[in-house]
Image (cartoon, rainbow, N blue to C red; front, side, top):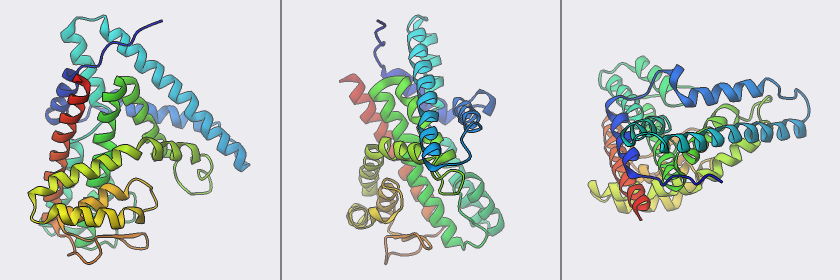
Length: 311
């Protein structure tokens, strides 16, 4: 039986550095893109009729893809252990880097903020829909665009940063890659339209499960970073405890409501939720403040994960 090599903090530290300096690799070299292609290929065989059939096939998609990804992750971890230390470090960090995104998220939010600062509302709407949200942005006001951007920063701080690093600290590359697979499957299949409502049930519930701890951990990290702002931690705590359950997702409301309180702003998605009710509407400058919190979350997550690995 193969013994998994010990997890080291050095690939984690190097992966963060790679993300900040290099950013995302081209799509043709990106494992998450490959995961999406695998899910899309398996989806072509989905049954066209029957809720039970679609539900079971969604589970089969996850079983097959998870087995492949976990197996590949375990194999990579074993192969890396046989390489010279420096080469192994570089390759593991490179693979881990593809599982999370800090620079890309911050850059996308800054682009929206810059467009608002230039009073280019059509460009801000386009950038928001292109990089950050799936909702219709064509009629959003500047404040609503700022709110949607801040919401995306908060939610993706959990999904695209804290969660992948959390699972890497627990189980190395196999767990980090498995998390990214589940998150990708939910993004592709977890919709309530006619074709995917039952096909995506299992991927969506798995995504809810694996984000249960990271989402709440992210909210706590936001509260710590809220110390930067006057009364931020009190408002963050109050709004988090009051509004976290307003969202349809059992997890997204936690970092978003904590962020609303930390910044002292009201985040509204019309017809869905109102986080921080009674606080001031956000403006473009609040996007910059959310990015500061995002980078603080990255530092705190790095400290926590490194401490766990060392201990």
